Image (tube, rainbow, N blue to C red; front, side, top):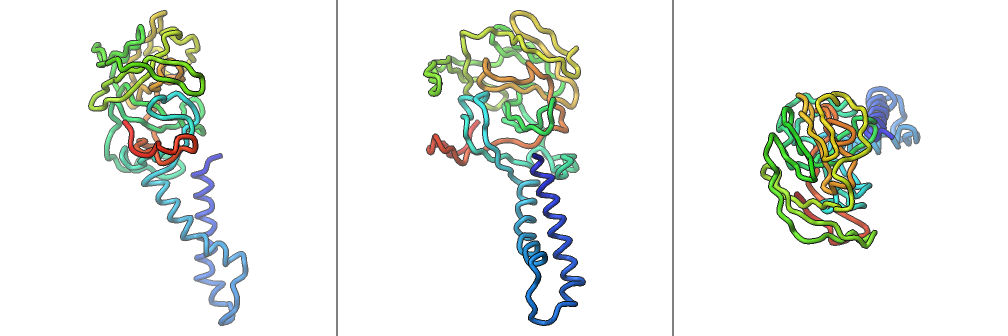
Length: 262
């Protein structure tokens, strides 16, 4: 369901009814007469819908994490907030940028529309910027020929599977964040799709190397061996960007998960 389109439709409908009552129906109603329900309800809901629409479209939008691809940074069930204006002001529904503010940086956790199905929202970490050469071979990430700094940090317990993964601290640009690697999984994914500009990528049994096209971004999950990301389905166009995730505000299973994250 396209919630933005639904909200916009409700805003238009309640706005039209409110305006028509102010300009026409209200003037023809007898003094003290009760408003009919089809005018009373839209007028009551219009200011609420307007506030929600403005907040959600231009300031912040809530999302729920559906999968473990961003473990350990984000867990299944985390409710997060996404900054909608940090990468520029976009028109609601059509998601067209009208004002530039900032560009995504390496290390940002970004929400975007899945390139294969724009009705589905994904969340991953920005790894490659336009023009970058991103290499992931032997489970080591390199950007423009330089290995990204990686420091071993013990083990990470997957509670739902009672399984330990190797925990590392990775430094992408200005951002230090945790990732996990599963030593039992191969370095190269066997599920690579045919995606636009796939000719920019080279795959082998060690992994892959891609040159990020102009106006696109290369995204990866922090749960590196359990993430369907740009290694599998390709680059994220700038037009698909929704915003930057920055805050965990609730998780029914982990009540202490409240606050910012890298």
